[in-house]
Every structure is written in structure tokens, then in C-alpha cells.
Amino acid sequence: RTVYVDGQFVPETEAKISIFDRSFLFADGVYEVTSVLDGKLIDFKGHMTRLQRSLSELKFEFKPDMDQLLEAHRELVKLNNITEGLIYLQVSRGSAGDRDFAIDPKTPATIVMFTQSKSLIKSALAERGQKIVTFPDIRWRRSDIKTTQLLYASLLKTEAASKGADDAWMLLDGFITEGSSNNAYIVTKDNTIVTRELSTDILHGITRASVLKCAEELQLKVEERHFTLEEAQNAKEAFSTSASAFVCPVAEIDGKKIGDGVPGPIAKRLREIYIDANR
Ligand code: PDD
Image (tube, rainbow, N blue to C red; front, top):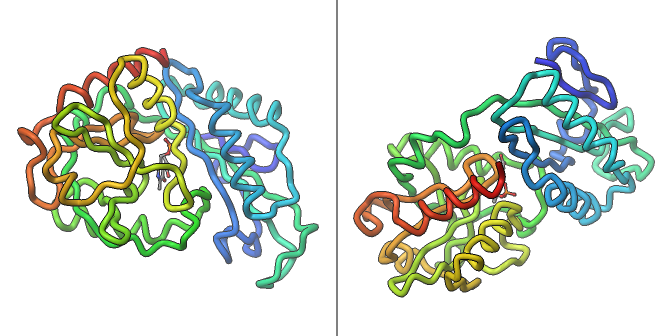
């Protein structure tokens, strides 16, 4: 694979960053994952707007050049022949030459990018529906910033897999916040789509924004509010959204079947509509 490091396209085996890079020592970095369908970038603008917001919330002085980032994304897709897959972009606070908790505002940013070829449209998981297990949400209280501090999400995914599940949803004060790397939704008995409102408790998903727009176009009711685990377990349907899995139906939460325990019609329809709108 060819990867991108600070303006250069290099073979992955030759890519180098400093061991003093603050992303490595302090998880002082933010990232975006953009999907590619038919060689085209999905929701690129939305991802870059969120990247700028993450950087500014963490007081980065660095302002990325959006035209350059777009060019680099396109070039990497071409160089690696990606028709379907993901592009990972990370901006970290770089290295000030030594380990120091306090941030030197003059630290130059490090930008890295790589591609992952992945079948997104055809998904066995979306066809059978995810098994979800819940865990407490003990992340820092700024889950709206897309930082590279992903240890808890990694531990949860691993723990979920060891319990025979596909993913973890997190609970804060009795309410679902989001999935380990996706936003969480339920569909109520009267066909209303419910998802937690935007706040510092969840990532403001780019796929979430697009899918809620699709839902409105289908004239489905949407409520942005808290929902409990119990409400989720008794819902007609449940699903998640992310750039890496689009709309992905849920079949089971903490051992309780959702609806008939298979992907529901609204989740399936939203998945189709979202994919059609982006190709
Ligand atoms: N994750 N919530 C969390 C905690 C996430 O990490 C993600 C994305 C989302 C969905 O956001 P979006 O629709 O913009 O992808 C919600 C990416 C895909 C990842 O970490 O790989």
C-alpha cells in the first residue's frame, strides 16, 4: 500500500513518524474515516468540517488546507486502486522533540493517511443483524471530539467478541449513548426513529446526519432524545450508523431479540436509500 505522511506518498514500509509524536505518547490527535464507493468519497465535506471542529476544540493552532486534503484523498484512492473501502486521516499535534505534558503551541502537526479496501455494500453482518452487548460509558466526557484515544472502544469490541457479540453499546446514567464506533438508534412501535440528541456525550456522526435526512425524505418521524436499554430491548427495530458500516441493523441486545430478531424493514430501507443516494 501507498500511504501519506506529511505531504508525501510513500510505501507503507517506508513511512516514518517520530516516537515523540504526541499522538503516540498522549493520544493527542484527531481523525476521520471517510468511505469510498465506486472510487468516490462519501460525505467528504462533512468529515472535513468535523475534523476542523475537533482540532479547534483541542486548541490546535494548525489549520489544514482543505483543497490539499481533498487532493490527497483522491490521489490515495487512485494509487491504491480503491473502489470500495475506507480512508483514514489522522492529524496529531506532532513532536516538540521531547515528552512534555504541557503543549507547546508551536508544535508542527503530523498528518497521516492510509486506505483500507473493504466491501461496504455487501455485508454479512447487515444481512443477519448485529448482536449487541451493553457496557457502562466510562469515556472522558468529550465524546463529541473524534480523538485517537480509542482504548476503551477497543477493549469493549474485544469484550463484546469474547461474549459472542458483534459490538458494544454504551450506557450513561441508564441511557444509551452510542456504539463503540457508531451511533445508535431504535424504532418505536409507532415507527418513530429515536436516537440520542447531539451533545458532548456522543460523536456527531456524519452518517447520522445523512441518514436522518433520508428518514425525513421518507417522511418517517424522528425524535432526537435519550432512550434507555429497556426501551431499546422492547423496540420494534434497532440499528447503528457509521462511515464504515453505513446503516447496520441490530438483531439482539443483551440476549433479548429485537422485534423478530432479524433486520427490520425500516433499517433495511434506510440502508438501501443511503447507499443509493451515494452512488
Ligand atoms: N467511527 N460514534 C463513534 C464513537 C464513532 O467512532 C463513530 C465513527 C461514529 C459514527 O460517525 P460517522 O458516521 O461520522 O462515521 C459514532 C469510525 C468509523 C471509526 O472509528 O472507524
